[in-house]
Length: 258
Image (cartoon, rainbow, N blue to C red):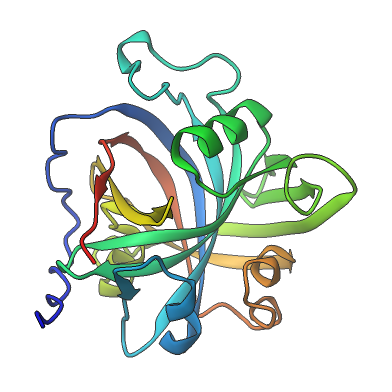
């Protein structure tokens, strides 16, 4: 039996997209909240053929609110951003994975979006766990950012209010772009996803992240619990970071051997 390959080296520089980009989008005003967890908690939640990617002996769970903007439709990149539906607030809960070839990625447990069209398209085209939510992002005079979300039903397709989240954070001035943990958490050049009984990898590329420290001012969250981590929101995050954002391109999905 072939042993899984060791994880590829961490790098702030993205590998070229195989076959070029299929679609693109901007990620803006991102706050990264992360908690250490036992890898055994994460392993059952990952797609077949992947295992927890660890840093300093821990797996990590991320809660990341931001604005997704100027998204193009898959296969129609040349037509430019999709009007209205291509820009919206998002909050995702994500895990960190490595497959048997050593390729590092992220695994999304949930993704909140304020655009029903985007939610529907992501479900149909990729099978990603997007959920429709009432959402907002606001920045006050001090530079503090407030992200709010309330899911429209537990499944995110309407109904009584589902899990909610509010994050208040203030970006700092200390550069963390080259910190090893920051690189581990942000420089992920694709996502692992299981659909129809097979695991695929969707690659992405963008310029190196600009990352600073940040201060968490307030957190009231139910998304982590809904994603399978009921105790995390009551704990102080082990890492709080901020980035003004990047412009990102995605390639075609391809199968992961397992």
